Length: 178
Image (cartoon, rainbow, N blue to C red; front, side):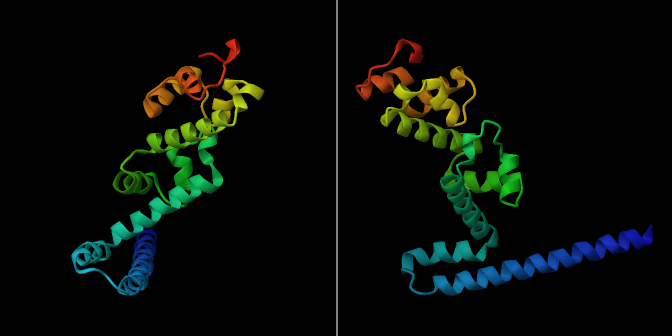
């Protein structure tokens, strides 16, 4: 029992030291890059950001999330969750949530819905709903239920999907009406 406790103590200590080395090295590299030229009024802001390594890590994580959304489009999967994102980015849900709240000023669901609605608006502008059904378009973006799609669409755009289509001067088939 003592051997197991000792083992875990040294294991935790080892990872703490390794994480500190990585964090310090990262801060050192970014500090050197930021020293190129900083305007006096922004010096305090930059200094505060680099003096708190947690801010720098969160900012990088936020950018990593956005890049991942842009390239991989994980939001298209209806079962996509913050847990799956954390696993894919090799982090945890708390860090994801904190980065989104601080730098994106939104929560995970809002971010996912923004990307889904943007994709749907692009598809509608391309008249994809005339070739396929509107259900196909919103399902392809990651929505599974029409009422949820309608609600989120109206929250994001201020109009219903039908009103949006009318504003694009697109005729809507009866089977595509919402």
